[in-house]
Image (tube, rainbow, N blue to C red; front, side, top):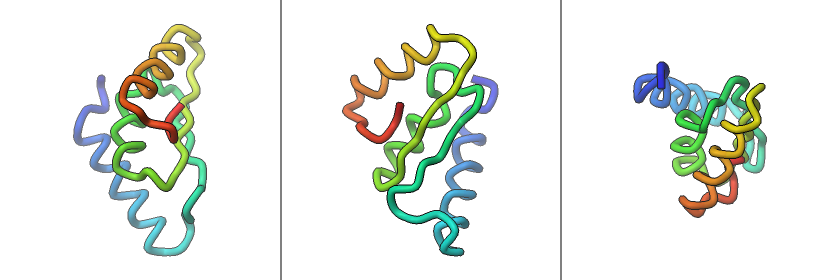
Length: 79
């Protein structure tokens, strides 16, 4: 994935900042537009189990793969 580990780390840092500022609260939904098969949101869902991560992509097949990967990883907060 073109965003790779650095992208995940940067997104995680942004989530932590928003939480610290009180702008992102438990149970909030984070949306990744152009999510592909979930290389960004699945690791985030694992790190932030108290948040809900939703992937949106124009390609239905990649969203299907994302859902399969989330289920295989036992993630209930990433779809």
